[in-house]
Length: 296
Image 1 (cartoon, rainbow, N blue to C red):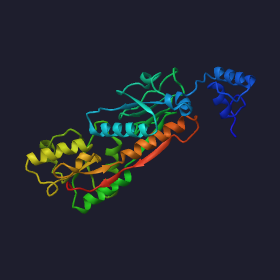
Image 2 (image 1 turned 60 degrees about the vertical axis):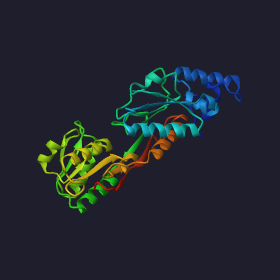
Image 3 (image 1 turned 135 degrees about the vertical axis):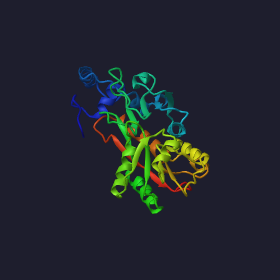
Image 4 (image 1 turned 120 degrees about the vertical axis):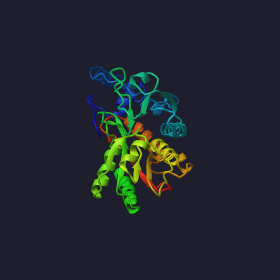
């Protein structure tokens, strides 16, 4: 059994800081003295595991007008409700905004979340696909390389030799992964800004376009149709995200998809584990898969 700095078990610490029965007064005072010395504050979420009515999850998501974030938010809301957790939502910003209102935080914004600060040093924070690792935060990482290689192999089998990857100006991990996969296959891909219109792309004579995400993929499909370009006959188009609406556009968009229910479950499981204390595995990995539709 692991011992704490106070020389007692974790269960004894839990009883002391939460004023629970089953512990003698002397031991309780020794634990509380050690907690004061270490500036320890009990996790609100951990107490919520004992008192379910007290559990509140803070959800920080990106732009809800983007169906990708909206779908993830809806999934987390549903999964949290199944566990009896309340959810409060916040716009992207500092986790400190949720201190006092939430017992744990899940963030999915495309940006790194700032730590909660001294006001809540034990607030469990889980970030989904963060751009950088923050010590102490749990994280859900997306594994894209396998699905990306599948997509590149598929494009090459369809005759692609002049691929163009549309990426963010700062070069995202998804863009770098596609470049790596094309390079492994011996094909040089050109990288351009994600918002580049077809009128400029046409000068590169691409036979395949890898959009930054599905929304950009839909834009490309619209522009290609407006310019009389046949998809996939002249140009093949691949998106990233796996939005369900991609199955309803014409042509249907091939994409790197991810199971948002799996992402949500992994995030909530990790929140529960982090509430039990530090020193645990802070990472879960969820893979993408390549979904072949009509656009390739």
